[in-house]
Image (cartoon, rainbow over all chains, first blue to last red; front, side):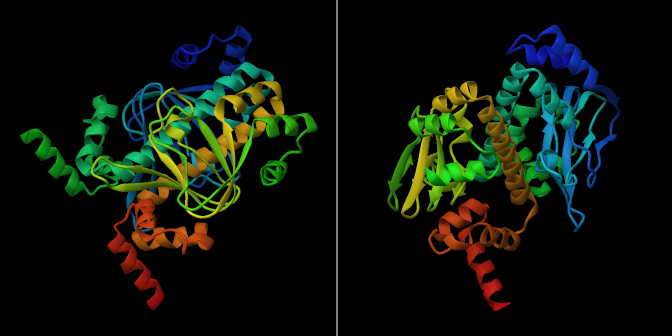
Amino acid sequence: MKELIEYIEKSTALSEDLINDLKAIAIEKNVGKGEVILQKNTSRKLQIFVSSGCIRAFYIAENGKDHTLQFATKNWWISDYMTLFNNQKSILSIESLSHSKLVIIEQSQLEGLYYKFPEFGLINRTNLQNRIAALQKRIFGLLTLNAKEKYEKFIEDYEVFEKVIPNYQIASFLGITPESLSRVRKEISNS
Amino acid sequence: MKELIEYIEKSTALSEDLINDLKAIAIEKNVGKGEVILQKNTSRKLQIFVSSGCIRAFYIAENGKDHTLQFATKNWWISDYMTLFNNQKSILSIESLSHSKLVIIEQSQLEGLYYKFPEFGLINRTNLQNRIAALQKRIFGLLTLNAKEKYEKFIEDYEVFEKVIPNYQIASFLGITPESLSRVRKEISNS
């Protein structure tokens, strides 16, 4: 929880009342490697803040193929954004790739805080705007980068976790085949 | 402007004061085919609402390759979201693919309205949330669909404009080669 408060207070100081309300709705959770935080096809609407560790949002297609939508590490939020704000059941599952420390908040309870504390609504707006920019950047990367550039960007963003994340998950996140990933890695280590 | 007001009022009635302020900051513009609305590498921060027509946000890579990030048709918003909320210069260009009717609003002026009319801040929150869901859906589609499924989804979303949009732009939007697009089209027309 300390990590979340510190993270938010980087941009704005929070009142004691707001911090107390935030603590009241937040669930701190330590999860182990492989532990599932959100199941697909449930009605739960969760915002997950990563205090430490590495988390993955993914989708298993009907043909069994595993697609990684997002990785999240320290100070990132992760969720099934396709269903977080509507009444649909979750499409993605979210699991931990390492021992991780999380803060989990129900979306409906967060909404309550935006009304009660307008300044928190403003913080949230910045947060939503940042997420929009990040999502468009991800689309931009998927469309414009070649396999090597995608992998180099991945290393930049997830340096510490490169060893923790299985190859097939990295490849699926980058939208390239595991074969391309091996080729690119060899290219880089030979250069 | 009528179209934008009607669009917003589908979810919430707007006060006369808010409508007047909105009209005061909005620029209505008719643009022709090929007309550029936002140039890359400028400091302008524009939200563009499409009253009618078809608009495209794109990026020309150093190697000359043209990448389509977004198409927008009636009642859609389009912008360079990677730079809309920060101080960076625009990365994308935005052009019209047909005769289009637009409402163009400077981001800083919109921000002013959120403060003055808290109810408009709430409408904006919903708007931002919808955009997050739409962007993650686009990533989901890029990662999980094959070329045929991508094209079928495109037809569903942009039915009217399939004939207006050049093939290379459709292919670049879908993240497939123009050759794949031709193959998929033949497959579909033969089935």
